[in-house]
Structure formats: C-alpha cells, structure tokens
Amino acid sequence: MDCQNCGAPVDEGWTLCVACELRFAGMLLRLARDVTPLHDSLDATLHPGGHAPVRIQTATPPTPIRLDVLDLIDMLDATARELWRCLDGIDALDWHKDPRMEDLEATLIACAGHPKLATFHDAGLYMHIINNLARKVDLALDPPEQRREIGTCELCETMLTAGAADQWVTCPVCGREQRAQTVKLRRLETLCWDDSRRGSAAEIAKAFTDAGITVRRGTLNVWVNRGKLCNGPQGIAYCDVYRLVVGGAA
Ligand SMILES: [Zn+2]
Ligand SMILES: [Zn+2]
Image 1 (spheres, rainbow, N blue to C red):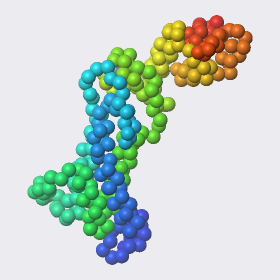
Image 2 (cartoon, helix red, strand yellow):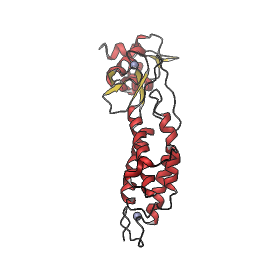
Image 3 (cartoon, rainbow, N blue to C red):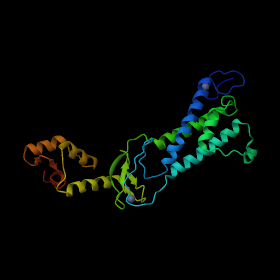
Image 4 (cartoon, rainbow, N blue to C red):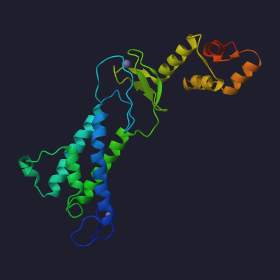
C-alpha cells in the first residue's frame, strides 16, 4: 500500500507513512494553538500582528468583526468535528446523535492524538483539507506582506495600514474605502502645512516618496548646499520642501 499523502510504501492497514502521520498530528496541534489568537484577531481594530497584536487608536467606539476570520473559525470548527467523527468511525448519518460538546481546541488535540490518525480511510483527504486550512490561518494571523501605517482615515481618523501594492484601503472602524495614495498624500500635506515640522533629508525624502512624490535625499542636500533650503538645528522644514517640490519653485 502507498501513503495517501506522499505515496511512500506503507504496511498493510496504514493510510499514512510515519513521516506524514507526524506532520498531520503537528498541523492539528499547531491549529489548536492558533485557536485563541484567531479569536483575538476577530477584532478588526487590532493590527494583524500575529501572536502579539497591537491595538490601534480608535476614534469611535464600535468594534467591527473581521468576517474572513469568522468564516475561517467556522470552517475549522466544522472540519475538526467532522474529522473527529470520521476517526471514531461515526457514520455521517449518525452525526446528529454524537453527544460530544468539546471546544474547538480540545477537538483538534483529540484528533492529533487519535490512534487511528494514520489508519483511517480518508487520512490523505483530511490531511490535504487541514493543510489548506492551516495555510489560511497563517495568512490571517501573519499576513505575508509587511503592512505599514500610511495615514489616518478621512472620516474617523483611525490610523490605516496598507501593503506596498494596495491601491485601496478600507477603514477597519468606519468601513470607508479610500485610495491609499490619497491617504498618504493627505498625511504628507499635514506634515507640510505645519510650519514647525522638521526632519532630516532622509526622513523627508522618504515621506515624500512614500506619498508618491519622488524626492531624493541627495537632491535635498544639494538644495541645502545651494542655499535653497535651510537645514537648521532641528533639520529641514517639511513646508519648505513642499513649496520647492510641489510649488515648482525648484
Ligand atoms: Zn507519507
Ligand atoms: Zn474610518
């Protein structure tokens, strides 16, 4: 017989090889450990920061829920219970008679330690399903792209975050959809309207470039050397750079 997951030869009566059984049990245990962080990340005002989330400042009280995470928890819950019943050989028609009420975490742990994990009939299929779910959970808890603060929501002033490629952002608090570029530009303008805001050439170049207006640090230094810009003890004024770059005075 062959392992249903990797195709390696296994003894009669086994559906998974030893390595795949260990991987399967490991995936289930990792998912059990993720249940609490998943519930925590239902709160949309948390930064998607995985296991040590940081709360963002919110200007309005309602706490919206991340529906994608809610769906994921539901799917994981249904799958884990289905798997447990399959492992125990309870027929689908008799599921409604299954009296067990363990929570999701306990169910996942019970499946991981089940003596039939590598011998039950649909082991390969469930390993595949659980693997897909584990990947989705990882994405929900630790998004692959680095999300950065880009500026505040135009309606409720909540700090918004976006990935480098995001064109639009949706405010997690008020639900307002905004163009990421507009949010960044507004943030830059706030910096530039305030006469007291100063920064180093590098900081200012970064703030402008982030907002979609390419300004090189070297260019700013050249302007300082030529006397077009004043570089005081606190640095260069954002408003001076804004006047030169956007006002076309350069
Ligand atoms: Zn295998
Ligand atoms: Zn908002």
